[in-house]
Image 1: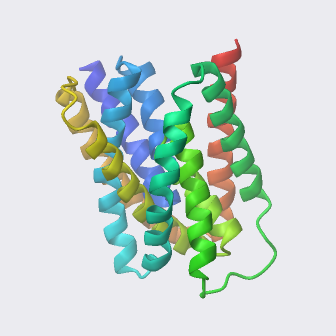
Image 2: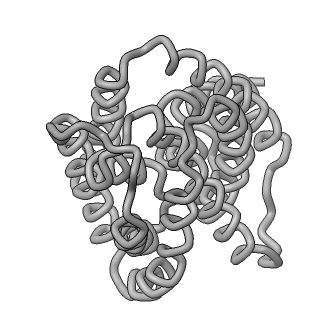
Length: 247
C-alpha cells in the first residue's frame, strides 16, 4: 500500500512538471523510482521512459489544441539530435558513473542559470531551420551523453537559443520529449528486463492526470514565473545530484 501511495504522489508531481513546465519528467522520475520505490537504475530508466512517453503525449495533445506547439521546430530538434545522441551515448559508456553524474548536474545548473537570465530580445515567431537544427543537434549530443530524455534542456534551448515564447517552448519541448523517449524505448525493446507494472501503471495514471492539471496551471501563470519555477527545479536537481555523488 505504501508503494502504491508513493507511486501516485510521485506520478502526480512529475505530471505537473511535464504539463506545466514542459520538462523535468525524466529527471524527477528516475530518482523517485530508485529512492522511493526500490527500482534498480536500469529498471528505473526504462520505466521512466514509459511514464514520460505516455504523459508527454497526453500533455502534448492539450498544448497542440491550444496552438502552443511549433511543429517544424520541434521535429527539427528531434531529428537533428538522433545521430549526435547515439555517438555521445557510445562515448559515455567508457566514462565512470560519477563523472557522468557531475556532468549532468553541471549542465542542469547551467541551463537553470540561463533560464533565470532570459534573453532581452523579444521572441520571434520565425525560426531559421538551420539554427533550430544546430540547436537540436547540440541538445541531442548532451542528452545522449548524459542518458536523459532532454526535456529539461529543451525548454531553455528553445527560449534562450531560438527566442521562442515560454508557452510555445513548453508545448514544443513535449514534442521533442515524446520523440526522444519513443526512440529510446525502441532501442531497449527485447532486452527481457523485468518491470513492476503494479507500480508503473498507477504511477503513469497519476502522471497523466497531473499533466492536465499542470497545463491548466501553466495558463494561469506568467511566462517569466514559469521560467523561474523551472530554473529552481533544475537547480534543486543539480544540487541533489552533486551531494549524492560527492558526499
